[in-house]
Image (cartoon, rainbow, N blue to C red; front, side, top):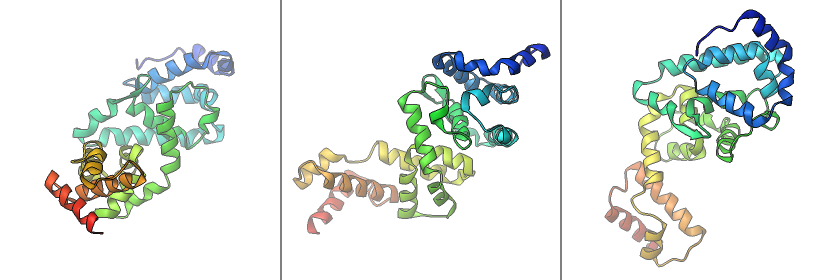
Length: 240
């Protein structure tokens, strides 16, 4: 609510923050999600970090406290500077009422503590997004290489579940049009596996998956724009 907490109350909070280990993780999770989603979440997070609350919840190394606050500050600065047409994206609901903005703060926290030690009861979907971020962050460097065509598609494919977040953190907003095209192609391709099986007379199997992926890549590159284009592509595979 962007309020000030009375000083003696804050001292009491700091002194007793260790008692959070006696509180149910479900209740802590609910309050943390409210904090992350709040309009004035940056200020609340700063206070919670300084008062030792987030240290108890996320098992932070206290020596990294200032570094964590600096990273959070940079995140909110980038949030304000992000393109106007994507700002609503940050309000997208992920799960358990957690917004994409809140998820991205949690992704920042994964760089300073292991989620196995967090006192949070998170859903499988949220854990999957966080795990994807942890395991893909080194691969995200491919976004900085000026890739195009097939190489860019393959880069996006590696980062699929967390692509928007990596584009945000790296400030590669010029890739947004390609990102939108990539997601459109992957969510609503011109033809699907059933079409491929019927057209090529194939049974279900890994080969279908490889063909589906090849079609999506070709559609992303602009080589397939219609069902007829897809048929022609598939007919070419018959010849091979």
